[in-house]
Structure formats: C-alpha cells, structure tokens
Length: 156
Image (tube, rainbow, N blue to C red):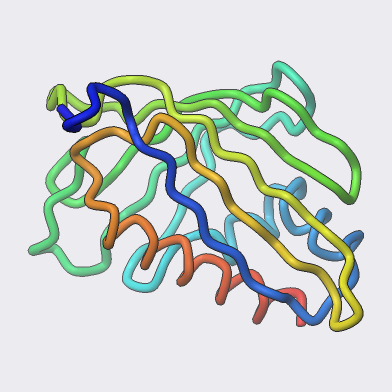
C-alpha cells in the first residue's frame, strides 16, 4: 500500500510532429493501435476493441524476452476494460484492470490520452490514475515514454 493509502497518478507527455486528427486515428483504429502500442520488448494482440463510450478493450501484451515475468502469465500481461469517453481529436479515456492473481495489481486504473494542438504538431499527454502498487513508477513511466515514441514514429 502506498504511504498515503491512495493509489498514485503517473503522467508523461511528448510533442508529436503530426496533427491531432492523425494521432487520434492511431488511438481509435485497431490495426494502428496494435502496431505501435507495445513498449519496446513487447508485442500486442488485440482481443476486443470497440472504440466508443462503453465499448470493450482487451489487449494481451507479450514480452519478447521469455525471462521477463508477466502479471498474468509467464511472459504476458492481459489488460481488460472499456472505453469511457472518446472526444474526437482531443481525448480518449479508458478504464481497465490487469488480469492477475497478485493483489498488488488489483484495482481499476483510468488512462486518459489528451491531445492538444501545438505549433510543432500535437502534445500527447498520458495520465494514469489509480495505478496499482505492483507497477513500479519508474518502469511505468519508461513504458509510457516508449509507447509515445512508438506513436510518434507511427504517425510521423
């Protein structure tokens, strides 16, 4: 448990040299998301993807290194949830939980992708609220930065 008794919030941002509509499409199109979402050293399999408020979201992330322990299985993390809010070219909000027997990963995390136009393209900010204590802050932020790098390469 965190010293305050509350889950933490993690946040990262990056300027992406693409207009908000291009970044938005990469967030709400299944094949695009599967291509760029996984952080370095992982690959994704999208099992359910309904990009509208209340729609299902189910992704399995596989570690390429078999020695990496996943939260769900030996080398995998399963994320199940739903889209909470989608505002075209501005915001995508998802609510999800990791499938795990480990209580350190229990609970529901809210992930918000915010898109803001800037002269260089789009400032993309990921805000994760109620982050499970089993996810180390440093690892989580590194993974989110890697994901934003993948997104920038995909739409750039």
